[in-house]
Image (cartoon, rainbow, N blue to C red):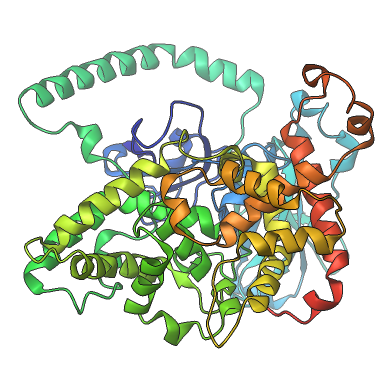
Length: 544
């Protein structure tokens, strides 16, 4: 038996505790988080399988902004949330043909008792269940079923039916009716677990000795030049395998002799590329819960090309997009914010691949292969993504703060509409603009009603603090992702709480520290002010 997690190692993930969010076996559905692995091998799904033939896959929560599917959320509730001590009980009765013809009513007497250690979490009287009726299955007419959820406990079900006189008749003979129960997960009381642990102490000692032997063999294997078993059992975070992804990306332009080389480069950096993509996708309420269908907007792509320095300046960025038929897909600037014509991961990768073609033509690198052009691009993207020192405090909050992430998700539509209003106001002489400039931010401050003569100084300070990286000065404005950071910065500057106003005259070191909760509180208030101010205009903007 082997257990694969979805971490690649310390290069990509800092040392820390990572919350599991899903467990499954290869080619199967998820496994209940409270199921003991020893019990799993007794289930019909694993019956007859040897432990060494089974692989368990663990999905971990890499950061607070990871996109969680509904399966993940359900699993977390069962592992750590309100459902952690709840078992699902299902009962199946298969009466013989003669009994079915009599149309009796069938029931299950539960004989249920909750484990004593759960008495502080659940009230016993809330789960004093009456006998449960078994209902005829709509598809399998010969089967009668009942289902309910109960706190962990002992249950000894007894099926019976009511005869013509209303008398209870217990079903004890399988020739009369076959009865089956299914309780997930299989539960154990604290006293039972203590007994099991005591009896298995010797087995655990043997397992530890066996594990030590395996590690010594793995060490010898590495010393002899062979990859360790751990290295062979790495599981990708990306929901696409390289084979599946390669069949979906646009490589028609790529010479055949370069295709395999480029494919290897993509495979090498596939996890990092998907992490970058997923970070931006996490700020939207996705239409589909399937990770393979998640989208980002063209605005997100533009910021990725800028922040990760795929292009040097704004003009080259737009040229690269035109190289990818951008204008045919985004007719108006505000459409660059829409997910309706957004980018799924394969199309995102396709554009990054085409950037090699563009860069090769612009830089006149005729002698370089496409893999040689892409390698430094992808390497830089991976390095920048893992370099927290390069990003600003607000950027870090957007990546790691779960509370802020939830706020951004809640206000996502509003912020996109605000950004769209500014874009619509910058259209002149038929030209399209996909960035808003400092003057637009200054005008936003003015129209919102915040007074003061130093608006220009405030805006310059804002841009200098939020976008200190060198290449940012080669762009004459900001994209949506940066606009969100500007809104947070402005909220901190302009929104003063009563306790802060009372502290204005005190020395700086005595002022109350600005924490994450304060940032979110001010940010939400500022967005509500903007929503009220631009209510009429925002109602006329539609972004999907």
